[in-house]
Image (cartoon, rainbow, N blue to C red; front, side):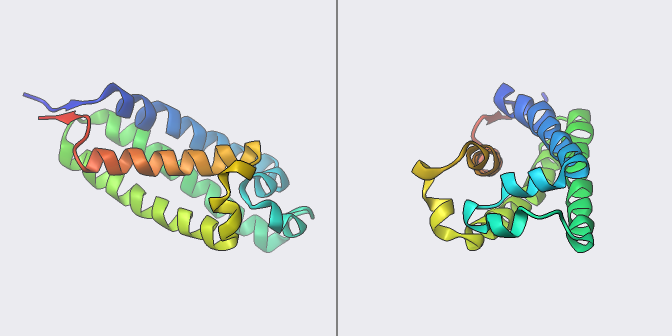
Length: 148
């Protein structure tokens, strides 16, 4: 009998997060200044207010490509299988990336990251989806919402 993967995981990992990743990639490619402003702490706004440099555009284009890879791995790989080993492997790899991303956002401005009461809407979207995705991946890997 195939394992039962929670509807919450299937909706989030197969549809919502990949859509968000593709939307983020589109934003990066079409409005890099807005992407930078909305994904960095307010304390860094002086660095993000100007038109991105060629180096920043290069790095943002790489980020956009990685967002597409994330969307592909979740939407097109996970939807093909109910094999828990494949789901665990893909989600563990993305969780490692989540941890690196959380660390990067935290080290940019620890007080801003931890000061959730002062979050802007953009901070809730960026940090909220980041932490939510990591929490859902960790819960999946710990076996919550997965029946054999």
